[in-house]
Image (spheres, rainbow, N blue to C red):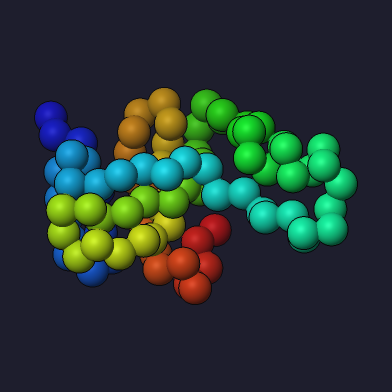
Amino acid sequence: MAFLVPCPNCGERNVYEFRCAGEIVTRPNSDAPQSERTAYLYLRKNVAGEQREWWYHKLGCRKWFTAIRNTVTNEVTETAWPDETVA
């Protein structure tokens, strides 16, 4: 069975057309303590289950979008543009 990712622009495509940039985290302010900035860059929750992630369609429309992916089953349940709400 192929691992398909539904691009909001191009529709379902093989995962090899994409780049996953990992979990979506909130960027700290520039005046935030060093510990917060370090955590933003290096620490991730790495959950077993649904996770909000950044994806880039490198061999298609070349656009960034967000997705909800189950990290256990690799099922992508929802995708959206960055300015749209993804639960």
